[in-house]
Amino acid sequence: MTSLALCLKDLGIEVTGSDTEEIFVTDEILAQRKIPWKVGIKAENLSPLPDLVITTGAHGGLENPEAIYAKEKKVPVITHAEALPLIAEGKDTIAVCGVGGKTTTASMLAVVLDSVNFHPSFAIGVGNIFPVQTPGRYDKKGRHFICEADEFAVSPGIDNRPRFSFLSPKVLIVTNIEHDHPDIYPTIADTKRAFRNFFEKISPDGLLVACIDNPNVRSVIDGLKVPLATYGTDAKADWQITDVSVRNGRSQFVLESKSGVVEDINLKVPGQYNILNAAAAFVTAHFLGLHNGKTKDGLESYLGCRRRFEKIGEKNGILIYDDYAHHPKEIASVLGAAKQWFPGKRIIAVFQPHTYSRTKALFEEFAGAFSDADTVAFMDIYSSAREKDTLGVTSEKLTVETKKYRPDANYTGGHAETLRWIKGNAKPGDVIFTLGAGDIFHLHKELV
Image (cartoon, rainbow, N blue to C red):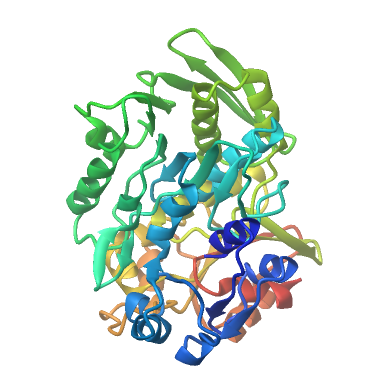
């Protein structure tokens, strides 16, 4: 919603908002851009009456007090999912879908296109992108609009259509497909069906850029009749990643196409997953007609974004990093990258599970996701406002299950208890990773 608000502001529209009392990573950029918000979701916030109300699926979605009041007063109400294509109208939409990598891949593309003065517009769900210094922008000069394409429901329980079903992308990148959001998609087959329907929207002059290292992606694109370019480490990829190395704080790899293009690419961000993200951005830029050398320079200038392998600080010789990872595959990827990026250092993972439904559905996968951490602390599950039932799952139970794979697993509970555990266990030379989509980042102020 923040990046959308920034785009609207660039269009000369007066924007206000409502939010919970909780401090969030997007507060800083909203304050910089002088976009005010009121605390709480309540009808009296719509005074004076606006011309339009845009709501997310959170806090009651289309049935939150402000949406209901707006309808009573004949003020149009639309969802974030409907607003994105309205902002993109008249531009070529480049969308990124998948369970992990959406934000980073979209951010890399925004940086690359910005670096060659393509004047990209973008709305990306993150606190900030470095070095463009904003997660959202609308530029009338450019022809491209970059965004994330999310498979979650438009308004859970009210409109369960996938949010990305409203988009009509010219270029669509799929980073991976995994079983996520079990409250909306009971099985992986349901998830795959939603993605397949979305892929079929690609026009004959567009392109689907797909990571075939992911088995579910390979399954979904099988027999698909749309323009397609695949990427990955797999030898069958149209663009194959080879010769991966990590040294001196840089990731390096070779990207080779079936048509004979061979490029050495350098990144300042870690992890095999970021190499895959960069490959997707490169393939897309190549399709858009960018000079390969310029694309490489743009990728090398990318410095990451908020809550994605983000360095928070250092205290008493202890490094503190943060990541939004909240799915088992994401956690395993981040910790694998951490082990590679910090050889010989002890990795401490502090995880706050997000939603009871996800934790229960992926319980075994979560338990096995911490093999690259030396020790793990589990905070209490951060529940969603849409969940009223704990489903019998707890972080204590997850800790017990994780001990089968990672004996040094610990249940720490709330923020205060977790801080005490960290301060009692972290030693100079260690690297702490806070992981999760909830409010775990509130630990940082005390830690640094």
